[in-house]
Each structure stands twice: as structure tokens, then as C-alpha cells.
Image (cartoon, rainbow, N blue to C red):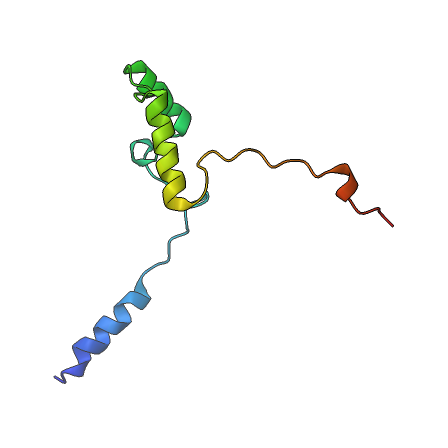
Length: 92
């Protein structure tokens, strides 16, 4: 018996498999316990457990300042200012 015959049989076996239709829906389906929780759900659980913002306002300002020093931008930037009325070009 030639040595290449078992190899050829192994190469042909995957072609004999029957294709299964893909499940409906978008993306993979995971059991609910394996999905990442929504932020509102996490907040609700934390409040039920008595957890919350454990930092003082001074600590919050210190963390914001460190973030600004490291990144060069504010972690809570102000909303953009509306354009001045004189700077708009007239429509043609």
C-alpha cells in the first residue's frame, strides 16, 4: 500500500462534510452571563451594593490634573463655542 494513500484520504474527508446553515442574527450569540453588562446595569448594581463615587472632589480634581498633564488635553473639555456671527461667509 502506498504511503500517500492515507494522506490523500485525509485531504478528501473534509470535502465530504455537509455544510450547515449559519444561525440567524448578527454576530456571535453568547449566553447572557457571558455578555458585557450595560453601563446603566453596572451603575444600578453598584448602587444596590452601596458603592458609588468613593473619591472626594479634591481627589477628582487631582486625577483630572494628572490626566491633563499626561495627555495634554482635558478629560472634561468644555463644549465648543458657537461661531461668531461675523465670521460666517454669506451664502451665494
